[in-house]
Length: 327
Figure 1 (cartoon, rainbow, N blue to C red):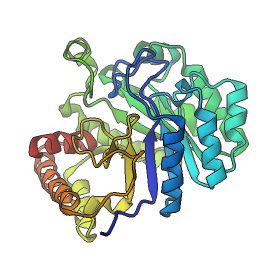
Figure 2 (figure 1 turned 30 degrees about the vertical axis):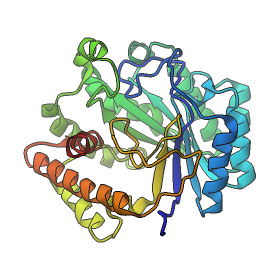
Figure 3 (figure 1 turned 180 degrees about the vertical axis):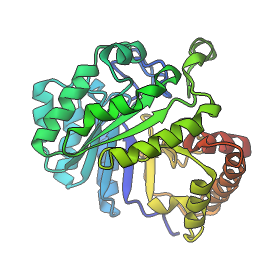
Figure 4 (figure 1 turned 135 degrees about the horizontal axis):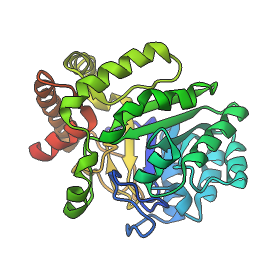
């Protein structure tokens, strides 16, 4: 049996969080109840990932600092020589933790998030005073020469904050900012979706946002990262590129692991396809189920492409929505 070769591993070690953001697709929070793998189970995954040739780990949550064993797990990555990105909302990042994280030779990037151009706006969405913690963390790692990546997720009322956010981070030497409109509310309850429906950016605003961001890419060429709002031409080009590879969009050789050990090929929670428990094995047989999933991805892409003829789409959400229908 031939198995899917992994180069990168995206692992959510918890869905608990010290914030409770209004838009959060995980519906996270400090009291989030979710089964989590043990320390030893996660270490086993890392060891197997390394043994089969894996090279890169995205270490995320929820908020990873909610786990008491977070640095024990990072020590394991360091011992194995696995390069990693560490993702945090920065709220719990005191000086001691920042120094510890920066001491890892294998730390390649610090990933954090911001939800508005001011502390007041940020708190209105996150529920916590973490704005300055984000700025301080980026400043700290920038001074250490460690790259940072800021995910700026904007609700409907904050779409005009785009350039102000870029100004906040453009002065740093090695910081990229990805700006993403809130397109859905993920796994929240129906009641919370009804209460927070006003924060979703309507599709008719995607085109304006897309154009504005493209214009700002020229003004801030070293700061703006790719966004997930795509037009027909971009999606068509992407599909054509994928079609040259027998694994289609799985050609990135990446897999995701949820806190309970579920293996998936999607970073989004709405994807209904699971390929076993990672703590048992991360080996994924390239069998009928595997290639059947690839065929579903192709069909979902065609549906997204058809939709994109009429308006820009939030690609990741659209793909998972169509997969849920096609399954």
